[in-house]
Image (cartoon, rainbow, N blue to C red):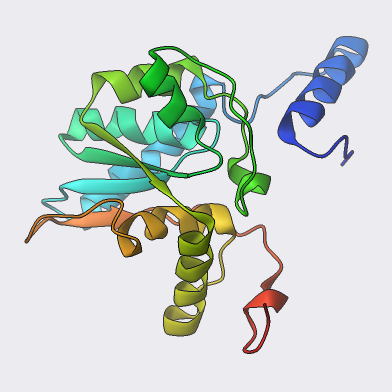
Length: 199
């Protein structure tokens, strides 16, 4: 494993140079239809376990997991709620602009959801399907992560907690009887800050 830079764009640039120099295959972490399709299979499994599923809530960074999930959701007749940090909102900004745009990243969830731009496929699925784009602020994300630990003993990164924060903050309000699933993606985190008394 080689680390380059402080954000995904830096690592991607280094990966491209490495692939070009060595002949290695470049596998983009989110702007890749095969990666997105593979990620989307999770919703097929969930729908098999939760008949009558109405809505899936999924965190969005660059859009790979979202694009695959939204594609599967469209096929299954399930609504997708795309949850992003308020200060790292590549999909939300692209939807507002009608095209992929660059956004600044300044969020507690930036290490996993900190893409400066969303994939074109993610934008296309957000525009085509039954998709709602919502934003959660960092305080709501931190609170949702703590709730998962304190109430359920589930340790997740802030990016994963963003999906739950969409609900706990009221950014998305399900109607009575709406059957939903929250995707808790990623566990790349330091659990030490979840201890009682930690920041």
